[in-house]
Structure formats: C-alpha cells, structure tokens
Picture 1 (spheres, rainbow, N blue to C red):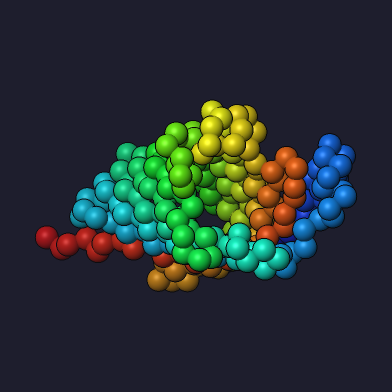
Picture 2 (cartoon, rainbow, N blue to C red):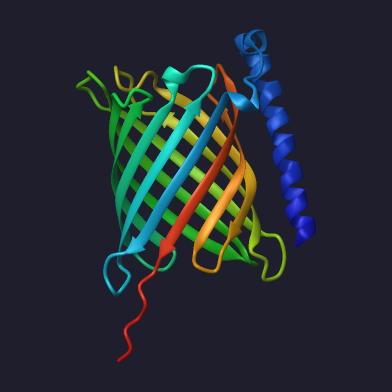
Length: 239
C-alpha cells in the first residue's frame, strides 16, 4: 500500500507540471505574467457534518472557508456554506444548500443556492467519491442568476494497513451554463486538481494538507490548502 501511495503522489506532481506546460502553450499571457508562486494564496476549509435524526436519514453540514490572497489582499475571501443532506442509503446522498461570500472588508460579493448528488464507493480499501453540484450564483448588484455545473472525482488511498494516513487526490471541473452579470462566461470556467495527505483521528476529526492546482483558462495558481473536518454520528440508543 505504501508503494501505491508514493506512486499516486508522483503522478500528482507530474500532472501539475503538465498543466503548467499546457497553460503556457495555449495562453501566452500566463507565460508573460509568470507562474503565481505558492505563497501568493492560502486556502483553509473547515467543516462539520452531523446527524439530525436518530435513523441517520438527515444530516446538517456547515462549512467556513477563508481564502487569503497576500499579493492582492482586497481579493481575499470568506465563504460560508450551510447545507441540508438527505441520505438515500449508505453510499448516496442529496444535498441542498446556500453560500454567502464576502471580501476582506466583510462586504458581501456573492450569494448562491446549490443542489448536489454525491456517491461514495470503496474498492480494495480505496474510497472513491463522485459529486455533481449545480449552483445558482448571484453576484452583488446583479439580478440574473448565473448557472454553473461542477463535477468532482476524488480518491482516498490508505498509506498502509490500519494506518491513520491516506493520500488524497481529486479533480473538479467547473462549467458555466449561461452568461450574464453573475456568470462571466458559458462553457469551461476552471479546473481544480488537488493532491495531499490526510490524517484521521479516532474521534472522527481529520486533517488534509496539500496543494490545489487551479487552472482558469488564462491563469494557473498553485495554492497551499488545509482542510479540517469533523463527522458527528449519534450513538444508537440501547433498547
């Protein structure tokens, strides 16, 4: 399993290099401006998910995501994303949520509503996740809704037997479905590719640290990212 984990990390860093070459070939402005350094931005995703009912059909989800931009502090962001989750079964769930986004001055810049289908499968101890999300975006001062489709494929690979460490890889594609003041363009919006390590404690608190490679079509960013999550399960009542 350790060999598999190191192989996955090698493929991840190779993919980043290929993306940078691709971006510089197709978009000369990327080459002219130069690659954005790792220290330019830092993202931190924090979330909690817990059961609402004893049967485990309904969950709540709350996410707080600060995004720091050190070169342009005015472009720093804070995202608050709550959601209600209905579990179809142990592997499938339906989500409905909202998003409130502010800039560094705590001035609202965007509101969203969103719906999501998520499926999780496990094969030979590797956990695969497929997530499809539809967003309705409302930029500040705009009345029209921008529609955007997002699809993520994620793999979590254990570092060894009964290890608390895993390698995490995911790719998420963003597609604009219309074009207006809230959604700048139709078609390809951006792609995010992440690779990192995950540590999961016994109390269902976990940490993920790695690099997010964001390709927008005209720019490439390598962003250090830390995720802290907590899963809360209700204890079954004894009969």
